[in-house]
Image 1 (spheres, rainbow, N blue to C red):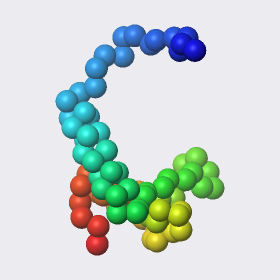
Image 2: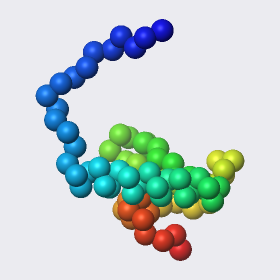
Image 3: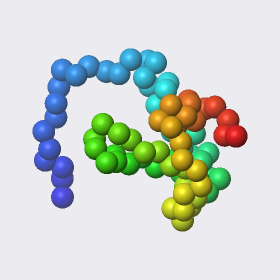
Image 4: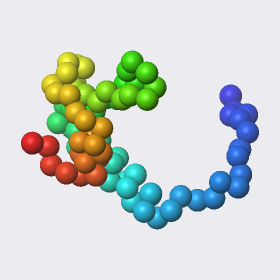
Length: 80
């Protein structure tokens, strides 16, 4: 079956900085996955609040993270 969605044009291309940041975050996600870890985000209890957890491969919570710390990890900072 072919995709029959509608293309949205006019949005332009992402800035180079955004592409680099996305590539770094993807590499970090792969490193975490290889180490048996993952970062999970949840909106709780209202959409204005975000809970961030570091989990193992089975989903058990290893630690709670602030959104700022999650962004630091996504940018490639070492896990402590």
